[in-house]
Length: 307
Image 1: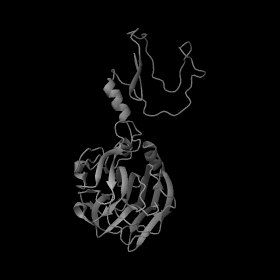
Image 2: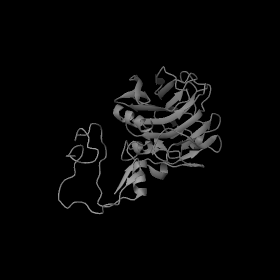
Image 3: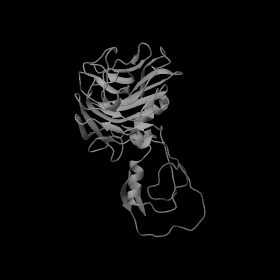
Image 4: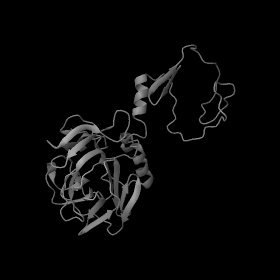
């Protein structure tokens, strides 16, 4: 007999190697417990349960640890194909560049590229799961990531990124732009950026600058999750730390152009409350892009995954 909690062995007993012979059914949340050691007051469990499973063989310690590390509330699993199904998702667990491995549905074709300077690998990140709590640091002057697969005119999407910063110079967190290979974009929107005061702004361009922004400051050095959604049917919505903070239905379409996803920097000229710098000075983790609008419940679950 072996008992594991959170992927680690906590107790074992070899005094018996056989169980009573009878036929029956698996039960979850309730059954008789009379005469068992430490008999509780109630046979009913009061609480929440998820992903209950039974295997026909003994799992190894490594397999149990992997189950815990890949649990449903890690950042990677929440964004993965059994979660919200991102098309682009960067765990940013690399120890060296230039490739940021894409865990989304577009696979290696959607890999990102780290800039040649300005990136610090392996910094402390949000609590995103066993063995996956690293992030990258961006220096605010050169550090950034871009994708190389051309994306055709996204009109329904969600962008999401964890960030931690104390900068008073603002910067772009994540967005879409026409510039290839990390070059400055001439078309740039579908982005979330920080103002000098640390406020979040979500922007979509459509023959004018349309924004949805909150009033709270997030440049306090703590980890925060920014999520922005857009579609012709739902308009613009901005979430911070899993909660809706701003929305707008002033535009139902984004500028038509093809481009690339950008993280940590791209042009911001002309946008309201333009920050001093287009480069973010801070740490980022688990940026992801979805080709649909995530629901409020999904955004809340994504935030829970990194706390």
